Amino acid sequence: MTLLEEIDKNNIPRHVAIIMDGNGRWAKKKGNSRLFGHKNGVKAVREATEAAAQMGVQYLTLYAFSTENWNRPKLEVDGLMTLLVSAIENETKKLNENNIRLHTIGDITRLPKNVRAKLNGAIDNTASNTGMNLVLALNYSGKWDITNAVKRISQDIKDNKINVEDINDTLITNNLTTAQFPDPEFLIRTSGECRLSNFLLWELAYAEFYFTETLWPDFSKDTFYEAIKSYQNRERRFGKISEQIKES
Ligand code: IPE
Ligand code: IPE
Ligand code: MG
Image (cartoon, rainbow, N blue to C red; front, side, top):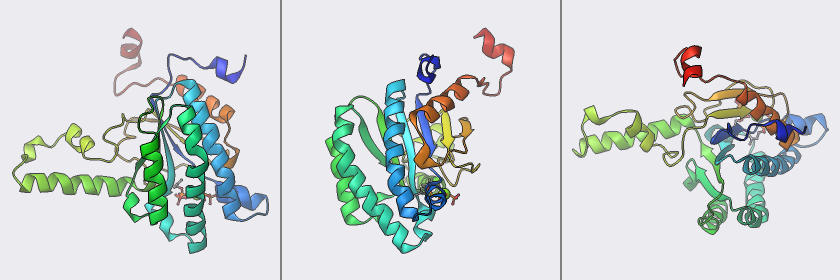
């Protein structure tokens, strides 16, 4: 039986989020530049996207650039932006062939103009696709998103549009850049690091976490299938006890 055949098609997480980490270390191990690692990371994005669509995942969110990543050497940041442009140019056709719709989360107004233009083009170009939703987190951080939500809600209170009593889980959720997506049930992080690095702080409240030593450029469909198999062996209790879950 192949790994894919071992996966229960009736228990696929609707939304998977991935922290794509380890490009730099992968390149260093090969005696190459960090940018070489990022270039090879693009192939892994393709693998992950195809595998997710194949399994019937409806939303795949990829952490591509954090607000903290601006602090890297300029050469690397510039290289990442250039790579983003070429990846969008090369992959949009494939997204359309596979009926995949592209979205972004994060403050893309701070990205270079040409990157923004390419991104918006690809978003428009794929807007009528009805299959999987591919969400790229760019210039994103969870704290940034929550801070903005607090500002928006505060302004609405100030303008007498809502009362303090109206603040609840749903209102906060609806004011995040992820409002239109369901919360991820499953988070994968590659490269052996076991931290969130400011990713989807609110949305991952009840997600299952999976950490693998695999460095991002080595991430393959099989790595993804293994991760999903692990997800399927977990019991999600949401505060209840095991017997209650089995009864339902
Ligand atoms: C992830 O790989 C890609 C981005 C954060 C853009 P890294 O570049 O963080 O690789 P390591 O963690 O240094 O190996
Ligand atoms: C997290 O990876 C951000 C992305 C994958 C885009 P980093 O490599 O930037 O995270 P830290 O700094 O090691 O936590
Ligand atoms: Mg890293």
